[in-house]
Amino acid sequence: MTSVPTIPPPHLDPRVPSFKLPPGSCDTHCHIFGPARIYPYVPERPYTPPDAPLEMFRALHDRLGVERAVIVNATPHGRDNRVVTDAIAQSGGRYKGIANVDETFDDRQLRDLAEAGIEGCRFTFLPRLGKIPDMSAFDRIVERIADLGWHVDLYLPANLIPEFRPRLMSLPVPYVIDHMGVVDASQGLEQPGFTALLDLLRDDEKCWVKVSCPERISRAGPPFHDVASFGRALVEAAPDRVLWGTDWPHPNVPVMPDDGDLVDLVPLYAPDPGIRQKLLIDNPTRLFRFEQR
Image (cartoon, rainbow, N blue to C red; front, side, top):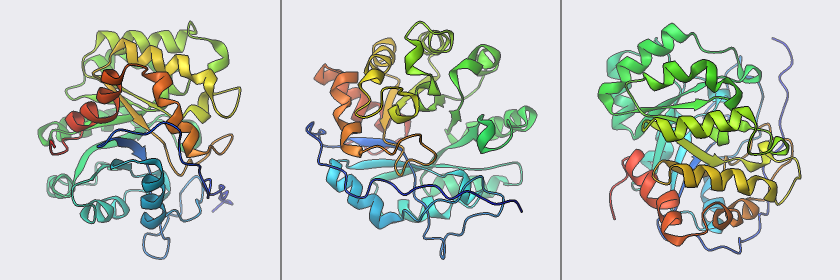
């Protein structure tokens, strides 16, 4: 096996944000890594993360004021989803999850994941995280998860949307595009990839977008205010189908963010309190099927 790069840990002392998240706010995109002695990383992983276990995850959310979370299983854990389902089991209903699955999973295994609090599965279209999915297998898996009420989470760069738009529009399940399509903020709101993302979001009621990971698309750096207009455009395009998340512990980012900065972007994305209620609480409750409070 070739050498696997080790990535940096998250910011170890994030500041308390100036913006106070409302009760019930949900971080819809975050990860737990390890501890590796309990949840080992697969040999074919594209990177090795420092352990960022459940205790660190809880402490981060306590500091930020996050009450609910959706844990996305990341590539280092491969198709072993226990790091997610074990955290859900200890959460008292506050966590849901997104799994990594493939065609080796039988129907019973998929149902077991659903019963454990999994609400969807993820496919990655970034070459640095592995090859583009086999789209025939993708279609077969999507057909199988439809009966579970799941959605598909897509790490899909916006510049690929024109190529994939017909397939996305025909999906039998909702789909979520991660991290604002990882556009380049320096290219402006009129760049083709971002306009394709906005058009898809407006045209297809199955399409959701995560207003997350500004550190990946910013070119100005912290506190990432050059990203605010992109998040606001997405929120305005479909206020009932946008989600917010931190992407903690921020694997493979160009600059490690202070999570307090990420929370303080929320009122820039959604200045209206009623829209923030949708972004942070109502939309994730509906998509991830949290219990109503």
